[in-house]
Length: 215
Image 1 (cartoon, helix red, strand yellow):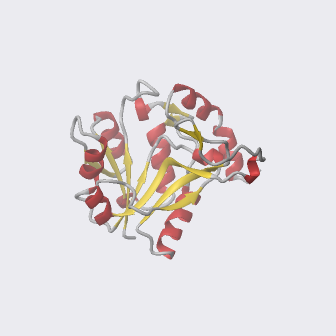
Image 2: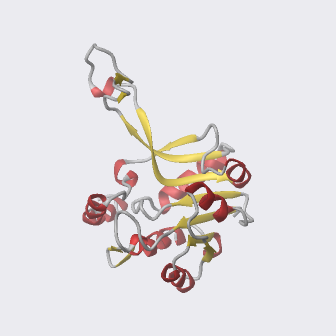
């Protein structure tokens, strides 16, 4: 498989003092995500990008690759630093903060990416809501209509990006100039961005397993 999965991970961020080492179920967020990725690819295809000694020890225990991240990099430089030495043609960038994206979704996204020979694919959530931009109506007029008739918007979930390595290097970005959008469900789209998100995500673990069992 000409694919490398890169999981960026920190031991401190805005949603928890332990960052991706925050408890999630019986393990940590980063271990949860590693487990999901191992169901999709071999250990040799998984890379952890981190500057944390503790997360590095988890990567060693899990027998996956480590990319030693330099300190104080901008987000774009962190992406470039993480990708530049990867030998695989395609990069799948997966964030631990989207805990309900799983093997099935990763497989579906990667198969879609390969089938249509895309240069970039990104997970999105479809929303049909009344949107204002700079105080102006963006997707509706003065004539009131139901939500189901509103022109939808698509929000990047930050859960999964797939991109050709050469394009990512050139753009220092995880998306090309014309990325293809891959719509996912609301539970899968949940991203932990702050402490309330983290609390809600922990409460939804049982819903995630029921969904996986089609209950």
